[in-house]
Image (cartoon, rainbow, N blue to C red; front, side, top):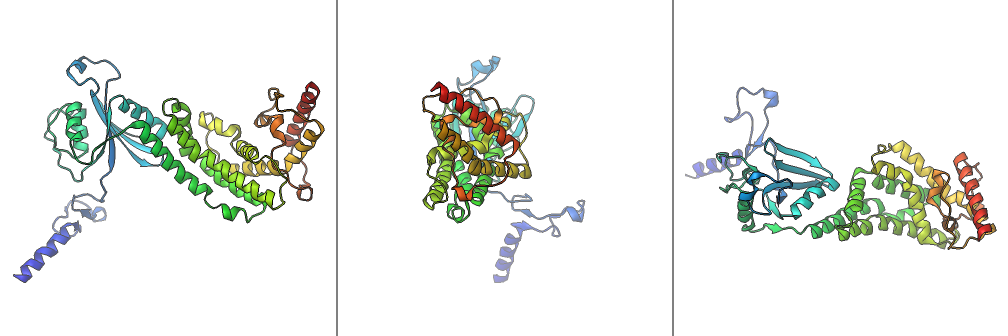
Length: 394
């Protein structure tokens, strides 16, 4: 009897992970394709995922809408699979659309969902659904995808059945987006900005080069552009989420830049300056027109080599080129109320006369003796002309 029980226990363990050479192996499958499968007959084992199931009104009037719930005429589902990647499953009349979306694209579907109802539902693996359901409309297909066995053919019927389950939650979109942006931007900022003590041990040039690389790696990533597009386009509808994007993203970068500048000022390696505005000026130079061009789809993201050259130029101009600006400002004092003219060259649009005295100034003994690049000479020449003009007008 003991031997029989031991044998049964052994068999139960083996069935949880079947080897291709046992009796379950299909002889017609080549040996090099034979693989192990789990107890659900799947090549891999996955944990159940959470889906946002959206029950929505129609976007276009259909004849059958009169027979359905006013706000639950269609159903689709989304799930987040990365910081900036969503999977959409939407049954159509003619196909099932399964595709990936960026966050700024997924929000458009979530806004549609908020016009009806959004439920947070965990799928069941292997599930208890059945293909013997007859009419494969949106409610039936989403129910099958979630592994449910409900015999309902309407979106509202599925909504009522799912709402009655333990663990299913209704989603308030504004709260959900704020929490999601807060957590995602916090993770992105931690990766780029968490190691400030290491930076302050470096020279000013090395510290700002490393800081510029970290910021640019995040700033020019596809995720960053997606969140930026979301914040810009959806800020009027979701101000709290847009605020979370700024507070846990750009604002954190300004604080770290300010901390670096404060450290080098305290150690005597920088002259005193308006640290807040100097920090913003450095980050604005890193962004430049390049960020807007990529965000608007006018060009592709730069490769690592081009980005590194750009960072080097920005750091050199920020730390050394500022000395030439301050000489001009000392000669022509500019009041805060004087408004600068429209820029004549692209490189000058990052500054106004009131901001020129703000970038970090290296002490005289640390100034670079290299010759200015043509673009820098051009910037200084034009800014000098502007300052003289503004000084005479004042």
